[in-house]
Length: 92
Image 1: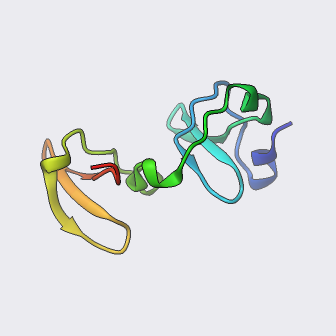
Image 2 (image 1 turned 90 degrees about the vertical axis):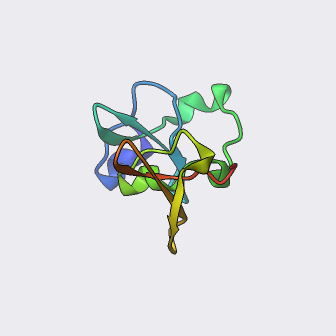
Image 3 (image 1 turned 180 degrees about the vertical axis):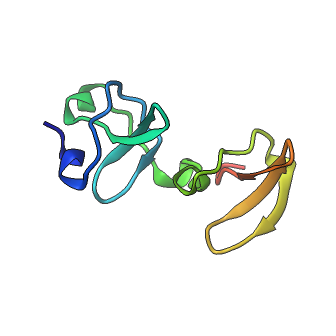
């Protein structure tokens, strides 16, 4: 079993971390959030939430271009690429 099952989410098959919060590390598989198993810790690289793209958890992709900035709100800086909203990475 996996820690995320207690929250109603399946455990990820892989170890690709998309987001981290107080509950643990999260991934996305088959367009659904899943928990990263503690067995992945041996492969773990420190993930700084600030280096992740805030918009992923909100359902929007990260912008590919740091110069796509269009708007800023409490969540972060937003850009537009291919006529769709995207989140500007904090590393930009």
